[in-house]
Picture 1 (cartoon, helix red, strand yellow):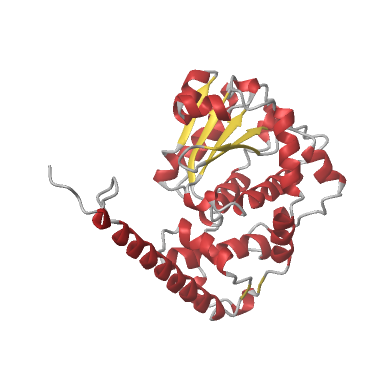
Picture 2 (cartoon, helix red, strand yellow):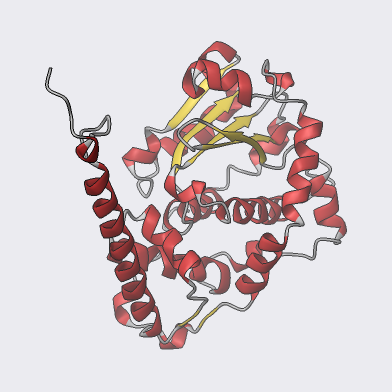
Length: 316
C-alpha cells in the first residue's frame, strides 16, 4: 500500500483538511451575505419595527435553509402574530416574572421541560398538560406562558439547526381540559403560529397517554389544510406504549433523556422543573423579552407584497 502524504490526509468523508476549511469559509461568507440581504429587506419594510442583530436574523435563515423569501415571510409573521390585530397579540402580552400567573406556571410540570439533547443536537422537551388546572389558570393564560417557554427555547440555536422533539404527556388529562382546545379558530391560530411564525425546526411531536376524546382534536390537526404534510408526518401517537416512545426517540438516548416517571434516568420531573425556572430568569431570556416588547407592526404602512404572508382563519 502506498504511503499517504501527511499534508493530504483525508477525513472519513473523503475531504481534505484544506477542502473542509475552504468549505467552512464559504459557508461563513454565505451566512454573512444572507444576513446582510435579510437586514436590507427588513430596512425596506416600513411596517415592521424590529430588531436586526445577526443572531436574531440568523434564526429565520437557518430554519428557512437559507431561502431568503421564506425567511422574510417567517420574520414578518413572527412580528405580526405578536403585535398586529391580524395575529394573536393577546397571547404575547407577557407578564412580569414576579407576576403570580408566571409563578404559578413555573410551579407546575405542564411547563415545557427541557430534557436535554440527542447526539445529533436535537433538543427534547416534555409537556405534561394533565397538571394544568383551568380553574386556576384560564386557557389564554396557559397559552401565554407556553409561548414564553417557547421563546426561551428560541434563544438556543439548536432549535433552529438541529430541531426539537416535543413529548406531550396527556396522562389523566380531563375532557374539560381538552375541550378548550376544540375551538377551531383557536386551534387554527395555534397551528399557524407554530408552523409559519416561529423560527424553530420541529422534528417530531409525540403524544403519550392520550385519551379517546383526543381523537377529535387529532383528526382536525391531521386534516387541517394549512398544516404542511411534512409536519403532519412528524406527529406521532404512542398511547401507553413506552417502548414505542423509546424507539421514536432512540433506545439509548431515551434512557438518558426521559425522566424517572417515564422510565428514564434523567432525574425527576420536579428536578427538571427547577432547571427550567433558572432558564426563565437568565439574562439572555430577559433580553429576548425586552426586545420583543419594543417590536411593532404598522398595518397602515404594510406593503401589498406582504399582505398574504400570514394565513387568516376561514374555519368557523
